[in-house]
Amino acid sequence: MIIVQISDFHHRSDGKLIRGIVDPEKALRTTIDHIRAMTPHPDVVLVTGDIHNKSDDPNYGAVRAHLDRLDAPYYVVPGNHDDHEALRAAFLDLGYLPQGKGFLQYVIDEHPIRLIGLDTVIPGNFMGRLCAERLGWLEERLQEAPTKPTLIFMHHPPFKTGIDFMDECPFEGQEALSSIISYNPQIQRLVCGHLHRPMEARIGCTLASTAPSIAFQMSLDMRPGSKPSFILEPAAIPVYLWSEDTGLVAHMSVIGDYGPRHAFKSETRS
Ligand SMILES: [Fe+2]
Ligand SMILES: [Fe+2]
Image (cartoon, rainbow, N blue to C red):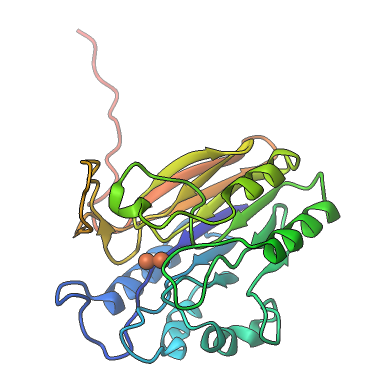
């Protein structure tokens, strides 16, 4: 089973560039084309939030037109830039998002690895949280299938980065989440977005990771007091392989044209 993660589109309904530099529409189109060209084709695509950029009214229909070109089921969770109810309305007919006004959390249990999407958003706030209600829901879902390999996906990462401007807003609920993970070894990994850089950290007895953005990357600046800045490093998408033989292996596929593959020719020995 091949799982692709795409994150932090920051799509704009008005068609304008982000900060006058980044074209999120082009980034999304290029990413979907990249995934469509993958061989073997992914079985599942996880969309880990900040789908919209919050600069204007969201147009999730325009985003969906891109996502519907994926020849694979895709599952969305909200980020801090997203509008919960507009997001729910736009994707509700796909059948996995809960109806009503509650959190956008759900389980996908039709693949070899169980997928749990979590809602880490605090409305109107930049930071992430898993409150008692959301964590209680997670515990119940994990108890349903304690031996089935499980992957959790969500927007905000539950770890500090060592980059000051990213750590200004700590994740609420990190200790409780870590405790739940420690007695649920079926969790293979937590995959997150939000930070616009590839990172990994241990939480409980598993790994948590963040994906690059498909649109623009945050700068790697570990100087004390670093100020927020972004950089046009290449976009990339995590690609996870799950099999009985390998377990869960994380790869990274860089978006862009880097030319053909070059075969290693056998060298003649003199
Ligand atoms: Fe983002
Ligand atoms: Fe975010």
